Image (tube, rainbow, N blue to C red; front, side):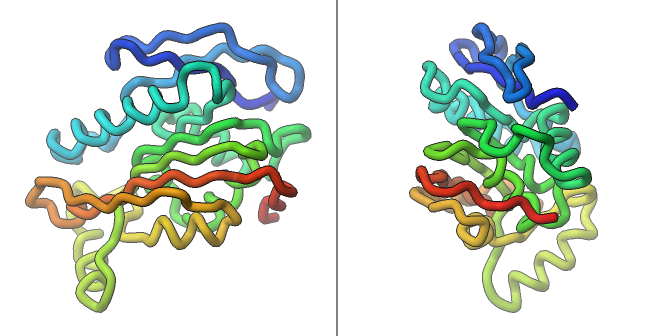
Length: 213
């Protein structure tokens, strides 16, 4: 693996993303990338859920665009998730720590079984003063929440993803500072997909965390 995909993002028409000239990767190679305007969400999810997530994803891309964040890892894309999977399986490549200015995820972390370990690696990939913007399935606290999560995992739309997890608490445990949290409910009858959380977290300019081995 020669280096992570890098590039700036400009979103004008959400259906037609544009790429600007990329910066160099930590290994010195230029890797052009267009951050997807639409995340590759599970096809089984209701259209109303996917449309709302696509809208929020486009807003986050607009937020990281404009030149402030040049190196963006978008976990809504399968090829970008492969960067995280590689780091989880093989460890970080030389020069990969701190190589991203921003990490965007819309239900991307739901593809990883161990949220804590995935977020610890995300924190290691993030540069000082970098930012994480996330929209992920949330959870209902208490015994009813645990029961709902267990039963909900049996439903077809929930297969292949990991729902009902405490994202803000797990982000804090990774060493990132959560600066904004919004919990919202999707207008769907599929109850495992009703609770979502959107947050913003930052890696302030201190020592980079160590990735788990």
